[in-house]
Length: 347
Image 1 (tube, rainbow, N blue to C red):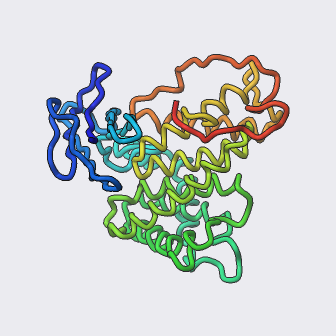
Image 2 (image 1 turned 60 degrees about the vertical axis):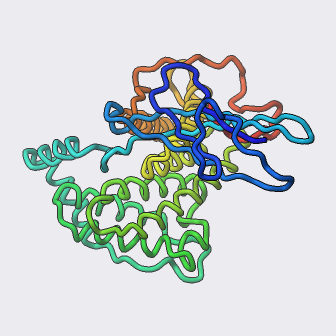
Image 3 (image 1 turned 135 degrees about the horizontal axis):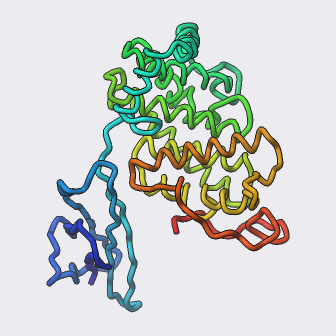
């Protein structure tokens, strides 16, 4: 005998519709179906998002799956997260924010001069397939062309810039010659891979509704983002605190936001080994980053601020949050330098 039912903790607004083998289950017959030895049942869970959940709003739904067999009873608790889709763009700015950027550039000569540099950079971009004979796809500085084209598109509205980015994504996501095959996006180490993927995700958000990417193009880039996130999940298990790990986490976080995967996004921020742990354990009480370099200090600050800003549309205000200080004397999750046990998870 197997069955499933929603678990209520209070304040849930989404009510799960549960079916087993296509037959809806209500609260009265949550025990479900009788399974023959070795047989299985298809469990489907759906919710209807109501009009008073704003875009970017999300809620967890918990389902208890129960069964009784020859070896005794069993129970499993499954939690799913539902997000109301947020219109693109939203990571750096939403439409109103980019409109203000455009107004500032139009009305201020110093801003125009800086913006024109981005346009010249984008205009000089020659898009090619991934580099032949190399383990990686592109030189790391390709990210500067990507971001320049994204800025040029969002400010001028000229679709040729969005088309350049979309063409690059098609090369990058090529399953035979691109990232899915090589699993190394840029020419440097994993720290650079982090900001390389961050700068893949931001233009993806900016040109998402430009009309230059097909649904197949978007799905192909989503596969690349998920490949990177899966690899990072393993890479950060050692529990170390460093600008390297933070860069990698920030890249994964922006990838998750770009495809609106809130489970992943919140995991990389609030989960074990996530960005909040980097903040709590990596910054001294005087505000200085523990690696004691001016460059690292300013870079880490920028990554933290970008993370906090990007979460605002989803209902999180980290900029004005307080966090408990740690009491250990080592900038590491384990003693004495042993590898951390367990897998990263949302807490």
